[in-house]
Length: 223
Image 1 (cartoon, rainbow, N blue to C red):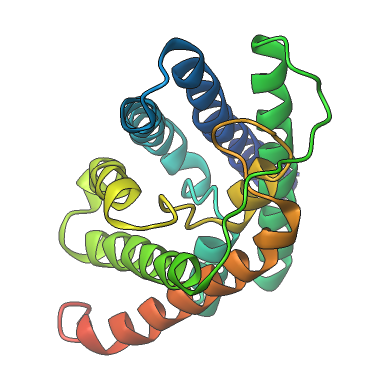
Image 2: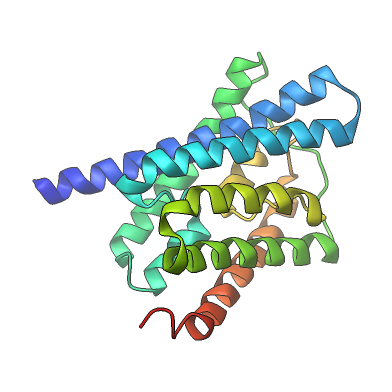
């Protein structure tokens, strides 16, 4: 019973964390675009809200589930042997479900239609490469942080995502569950559903490349 209770708590943490993260991304985008027509200022507001949510959510939910909130991160952890295959499937399901719930929560808060499909194009080589870079950096930060600054991972991830919002052409989705969730909102943070698969593929490539790199780069530190 304790094992069942433990996985239920972990899945609840992953679903809740992903939902609140997406609600922060989508909700702050709606709020920002309603308050200003300056796209740069709106993106800055969106960045601050997202980074703040990440720091808080990783800090409070990390001890329960690891605070992945991201199928690419969970895949990396499974390949490292830190997560079983069964738990990987469950984590990914919880993350996707939580992401969709987060989008719907943002819509309800701002009186939007519950069901929407984004019309915002995010397509092309620059976008795809940006997502590979963003995911590579995210996994690098997490794995390196686990070795040298485990207690600071929440802040490391939050600060990295803050930067990645601005140095990547895609504004750093870096998360398949968040990408799918953002395809269901026709707002500032949205992405066309037809553009999502290529971004997700790039995210997975970047995450796996980071795992391969860190397996060599951090080998001495891990001994």
